[in-house]
Length: 162
Length: 162
Image (cartoon, rainbow over all chains, first blue to last red; front, side, top):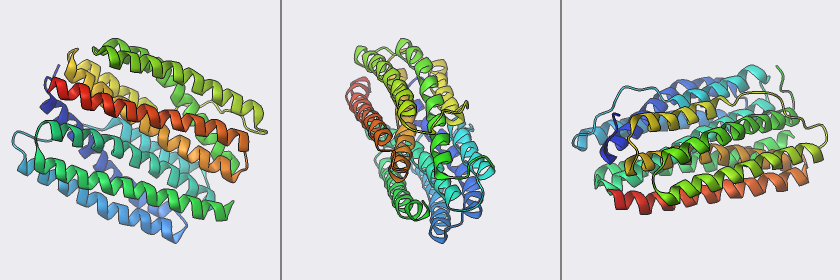
């Protein structure tokens, strides 16, 4: 029983998403290479840049928040989500159908992050980690915006391809 | 290369979420037993009932949509998400902090489903599977409502516990 307080739960969730973000930085270049549509490729590349910024934001959060340290752990759910993206690359030939599958896989990743950063924002509010809450809210907004951008891309591109 | 068309991609995503829903029906009773707050327990029980209905809805979709059959597969992402919920049960003593962790785990599950049913609805629209699209939209609405319900529970209950 290692998690006893809401502070511990916050650290657990933060460490989980830190691992998730690291895994995403390794997956996105593969997804960009596997995609065909230039707008989708540049969306993946832009999100890779953004993800690096989100990792830096977690590092900053740890710096400014007393008693918060990242634990070394592996986000199991993100491992599964990344495998699903790889499955699409393995099972679908390069082209518009694969692009549609990659968008779907990326949106699952975004929703994982939306749920996690939503929880972290709520916990930071309760724990009165005000600077941490602001940093987390910035990332949450970016993840929601990326999800909307991907939905729009899916509607336009997959519609053309069908 | 088994997925060649948008129809194939639809069947792949549908089979994935069918496996996810089955896994959820096994996880929710454990989460209900592990929770303390009566409202949270009844939210998990209510969502279990709803999940059974969602599985029946997929069965109906397959019945009414030509050439759509479920493939036997295991949703890897849901496997990871369920393991994360189990981790909370293992690492946190029964009580309000565990409840907060269970809510967070459940919201990740909801977001996985929101992303997947969102994709399925979009694909069903493009493929002109109109009855399927209506069935999927019903489930999508239920998942979004459950996520909102869990957010509210987290705000009230975790606030009291902190």
